[in-house]
Length: 206
Image 1 (cartoon, rainbow, N blue to C red):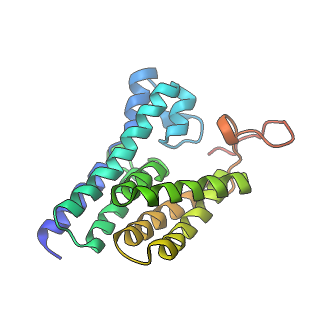
Image 2: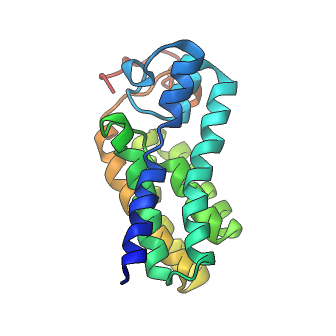
């Protein structure tokens, strides 16, 4: 481990800490995205409060901040394990951002960006696994938690080893930990927000 590696890790965390959902929602609506909905700085919560265009912008920016640090680490000759630590720190920065009082998002977009930087195929497999488990379990937090635990296993079976596996382990560990905070949350609005009987569920405070 070199001083440059540590410096790069700090930059990765700071990049992850850029709260695009907070900034864009304030710009568009003049509100703090964390004050309603799920209480998190996420694409979904941005859509709820500022519309689909704002949500799309947040999604792309959060993907980019996960993608760029990992892509640069690999291009600048960092070893696989160091790039994986950078990936985990980007996601940690997104979830607990220093620029937003450590109240951030859930880490999915930045995790996706980090995996995409290593393997587009891995990104597609991971996205498919996430969608599958959320739809089957019909609970975003629990489905994402289970997907986060199993995606590294799937990558091990598909890719055997290498940077994609290390990055998946680092990012999915952070994402799984983050989604435990919403384990008992009842969802409403958007695509998972109505119960199958047709009635609306009451949120538990997010």
